[in-house]
Every structure is written in structure tokens, then in C-alpha cells.
Image (cartoon, rainbow, N blue to C red):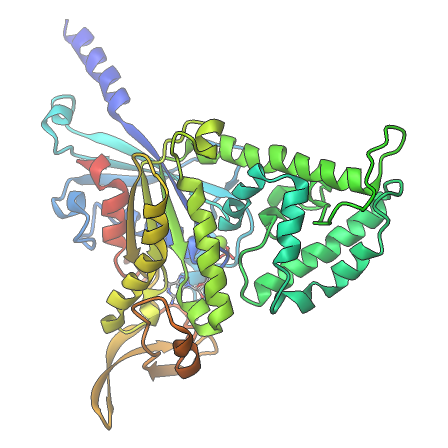
Length: 460
Ligand SMILES: Nc1nc2c(ncn2[C@@H]2O[C@H](COP(=O)(O)OP(=O)(O)OP(=O)(O)O)[C@@H](O)[C@H]2O)c(=O)[nH]1
Ligand SMILES: [Mg+2]
């Protein structure tokens, strides 16, 4: 009888040992790799240090142990924690290298449950966490699913104004010289698609992140595949699809359709549909530094990104799959770049960008929170004495190794007005990580609150 009782309790236990998939995204350079690296690092010290006061399970000393374990999805690259942490802890410290594709890692946290129902079934339980890093650019492709090639092309060509126009000249000239009704010339199409991809890369380099198709700039395993070799173009005046001949236009259209189903739809079905919680990292500070166009572009990209969490019954995503995400966290990264008195402004600014869009569409059963954080705190906060008195300042070491103390400027509390761009800018100096003791958790800002939001309820 005792044996049976043990077996039953083990079985129930296994059922209770929870799994949670947390996906981390954000546009390139938003801070995804640094975030996951620091999160894993903080988790590693959970049972031995009480360094995360806002994580209740840690504060109540209910964490028994933690361990990184092999990931479950063997078709996805491994998140290279060792490489990232050794960059941060090397001498002099540096940042992890940019990443270009999806990657994944898994960690287990053994804890003493607080809930009576869970306690009855065993002294300890294990929470398995899968962390997935993927480019936010991939989420910008969602609208493509509802647009025909003609509609998408018209939209892209319409957007060629302002700073984008001169960057597009080369591919526009090449594509205008192409006879769309002629028999398909694969080589030529590939050549023009390369010019189009170069244009998208130039947009990103100039601080414009809203580029489509997202895989063109971050192709991952699809680099060089014909499904990424198309470009927007308006239909020829006398376009007639002839059975006897496959024209350049036919091929472009077919590739676009292939991209819609095989790339975009598959990403949502195979990855996105399996996520339980989503972190969207936003670097608000670099666009503030880069100027008005870049800032507006980031805002537009965020609006696009938010569409992926729109699960209303009539929504596109609900028609594709049944979504499981129940919490989304929007986090403004690199908060160590602003003085402590500006953190509230940064949070307001992020809220102002997210809340109106979030409220505007019906999100069913999805909780949302905005926070500010620094995954790896690279600066120390302090004061400097100025003629007007003591002012807040941050002190850090620049990438070239100079120690500097500065007041980077005020973060606008509201969406910046045109006057803001004329009068002031945010001074964004890049710092390298502080020298840290490899035996101690990395310095950070608010990762404990982040962890409480993401997994606190699972550790009750
Ligand atoms: N000061 C500070 N800088 C940060 C922090 N996190 C990221 N950064 C800076 O932002 C850069 C990009 O961070 P990553 O973590 O590589 O960003 P990512 O989103 O993974 O970038 P990609 O892989 O290129 O898409 C780093 O090289 C740092 O310069 C932080 O917490 N504090
Ligand atoms: Mg990365």
C-alpha cells in the first residue's frame, strides 16, 4: 500500500512539476542576449544568495537549488550562455556579440511550495523554464499574412519618403529596368533582391527598424534561399498571367506567397503558438539620441509588434492557432544609462507608447505590464556639483576605456513634441560592463521584479 501511495504521489508530483516557456524578443540591439544572460546568472545564485528582494520565493528562502539543463527543442540553436557571460566577466569587460537567429536554453528551479495544495504532494517541486531568444523583426511580418503581393508592394513603395528615399535609389533603378512580363530570369531577380535587402540593411543602420520582410535582414537558417529573393513592385500595366510562360512578376508573386505561408505562418504556428509568456525589450534611449525620425519609426514598429498579441476572437492569430501567452512584459532596457531621478520618466514614456495601442485592441486574457530595467548595470549613480547645485549623474567606463561622470539629460515624460527635438537631445554614451566578481551575481536593475512578474506565481 505504501508503495502504491508513493507511486501515486510521484505521478501527481510529475504532473505538478511545471514547465514554462518564456520568449524574449525585441528589435536588434534591444538587449535580448544581455537580458537572458543576466537572468540565467541571477537564477544560478538563487539558492545561495538573497540578492533578489522582490522575488518572493527567494526572499522567503524557498529556493532549494537551480540547474541549467539541456534544452528540449533540438532543432533550435543553443543559447550560448558561457560565451556571453565570459565576455561580460573578461578583463576588460565587454558585451556579448550580436546574435542573428532564434536560440533556446532551459533551467530548472527546485523550490519548496508555499501553497497548501502543492505542499501536500511533496516537500519540493521543480519549475522548468525554457528561455527563447528570437528577433523582434520577425513579428513585424505579421501584417503580411493579410496582404496580397499587390497590396504589400503598394504599401512599401508608398513608404519611400524622407530619409528612406535616397537609400532606395539603387534597387528602385534596378527594378524599374526589369521587364516584369518577360520570362523569369532567376539571376536577375536574385540580384535585385540583394539590392532591396541592402536597402533594408541601410534603413536599419540609419536607425529605422520597421523593415519588411523581417527575415531579409535577419534570415537565420534561410540565408540565400529563393524564398527570400523577392522585392515589392507594382504590377505591370498589362499584366496577364499566361499559362505558357512564367514571367518575372509571376515568380515574385509566388515567392511572396511562399514567404507568407512557409516563413511567417510557420513561425507563428511552430514557435509563437508554444510560448507561455513573452518579454518584449525596448531600447527607448538610442532612438531618443538618434532623433525624431528614428523615434517615430520605433513607435511604429512597436505598434506593429503589439498586433501579435491581439487574440480577439475575430483576430488573425486566433484563426491560425489557439494562443497560450497569458502575460506580456514590455521592458525599457539599459536603464543604467539614465540617472535614478529619470527612471520614472522612462517608465512613463514606455507606458505612453504601449498603453493606448494595448487598450485600443481587444486582448483576451493577456495581462500586460511595463517596467524599466538594466540587465547588466554598467554605471554607478551619484552626484556632480554644478553651479546650480548638486545634480544627479552616472559614472561609468566608455567602450574605449575612459572613466566618465555625466548627466546624460532628461528623458521626456511624455511622447516628445517637435520642440523637444529642436531644444534638447538625450546624450547616449555607450559604457562597457563594470568589472564584476565572477563568483557573485551580475549587478542589475530590477531583474528581481521582472522575475517575480514572470515566474513568481509558478513558485508559490
Ligand atoms: N548599459 C547597458 N547597456 C546594455 C544593457 N543591455 C544591453 N546593452 C547594450 O546594448 C547592446 C546590445 O545588447 P544585446 O544584448 O546584444 O542585444 P540583442 O537584442 O541581443 O542584439 P542582437 O543580438 O544584435 O539583436 C550591448 O552590446 C550593450 O552595448 C544594459 O543592461 N546596460
Ligand atoms: Mg542577441
